[in-house]
Length: 404
Image 1 (cartoon, rainbow, N blue to C red):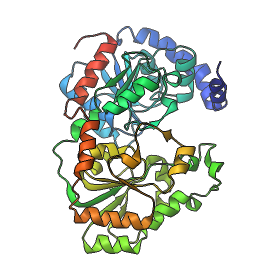
Image 2: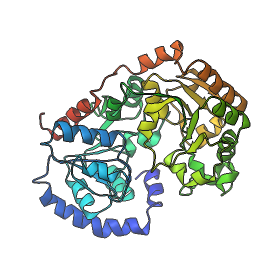
Image 3: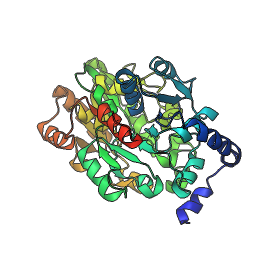
Image 4: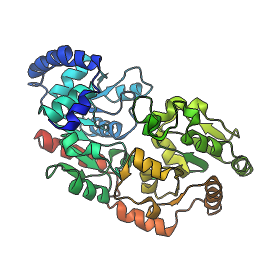
């Protein structure tokens, strides 16, 4: 066994061991009988509380265009997103015994998450190291721009890896070690909903991603000696400084602009720590705001490294990158991949003064995407239509071995 295997064993909890010893065998035996009548089952999920990403849009497409299919969505039934899934079709409780049985029985397991199963530790062990085949198709929840080694085939054993852009597809196919035909450039299902949008010209969206070393559930926190208090971190101080900026307050209020600050889900538990200088700034709780709707209706996006900028670029709208900790991010989270922010789809800056100045410049330019960025984006997204879900569905059917 590899060193990586023994490192992962150390992360297995008592709860995981109980699941492996008691729940997995029961679910596996039941699945042997269940799968006889459900060999074509398509099981779809995102993170346990969400239905607003590629998984939801694929589920919606299948239910509306192929109602004959046996497709089920997995979600926490107490989630604010659960009702809209129920209106489309059958859904089951995340982590439940049914989830275990259906996951082991499905013809294809489709997820926006690497895991997308009832227990990440148990199934990583079974699928990656012990040969359990579950026909996982990875929809992703954002275009992969970094060298994400945790997504290499040796660490996932996934049957399908869906890409949203041509350059991303080439990088993953050549570097991530997947067998021929496993990596597909088909476009993201959620892209189907990013055409012909009504944009609010007075709305700015700010979406910084997370920092692994600030996640309480990781051992990486102390890597940069930022302490255990979130408000002492450079991440908090820089973004809070921006939100409290007097220049930002004046600019927003004089021009009747709204700024929505929506940090990554992994940072949302700390949302209440941030302060604002103006009523024109909204601190967005993930439970109350749909990311895709915010992306569609906003005129301008500010982020650091979040791959949501790809969706914004796909819609041919301007992006600005505020990267005050670039070196630290590369050392502590994701190594640089094929995408170069310095020569990408928008300007990359690292000071507050530049940030405020560039927001003002973009506003004065009426939020119009510059031609130099537009040309790069058009080359990057060779596929630009509303048939992404259809292509992904056909690929799933190929895996199941049943023609459309």
